[in-house]
Image 1 (cartoon, helix red, strand yellow):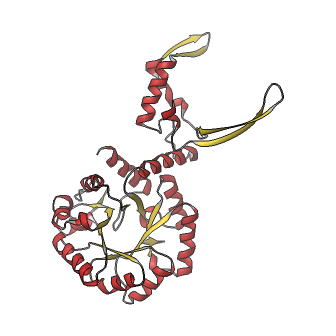
Image 2: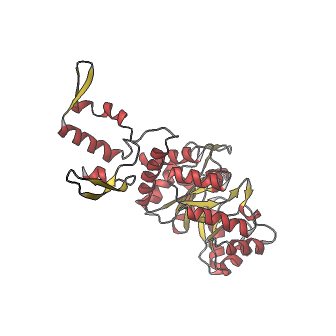
Length: 341
């Protein structure tokens, strides 16, 4: 049963009890199940190992221990959440499912983030939703419906401290456009300790250079360019400034530029060499946001290819785009893609 016991949602529990001889004993169980399990739902899973009957008015079950062990081990290896309920209001099972998902992502080469716009409107809401979903990184783009850089440093620092206290790190800050006074933006990013600044691959060269000079890591995301133009512009910036500007591959924006992101853009731009982050956002050719792999952005193929390369960067759910649903729905959507690769 060892394989079943070593699951990420289990707790270390210490109990003190008194023996029949009056001796007080303290014991610790390292892998103890969380406080709530959906044992009622196990009946159907154990049908092959169980015989039902009655003794008087009592319904009884006779279970073959060997078959139960083998069945539970097989089911648990396939689905560590098999004994958890699906009730979204059950805090125990929600927490434990989040821990299982977080543990799964820990075994991937990439790091998973969510855009703050997808995570929620208010910071407290973002934190709650990220914790419920097992998301440990957040990219700041919009907070309370406004771009992150519209807020003073003091407020942003307080919010970032709230994220950190909840075990959530800020992966980057993203600007959808560069303001007239780019130095104010850069000063703000430095003041709040933003490690990476993500800028649009338009007229951002001056701002990118100033940000790099200020010690920030800079990455560009494609906007209205095709792959060849985007790659040429990125490489020109990297060569001219002798900087290691990274690339944030946004498949939805390549669709809007009229390209097939996986079959065309990824190959034409040779982006495997420069991509630091993959935005997971999907749209149709006419610009309608869809669920992941529900549009024309070839999201599933892109995730698959970068996993094959043991991609060490970020995959950001909702990065640089909109998702037609909640963070929970986006995480479930993303999980389904991983399960079918």
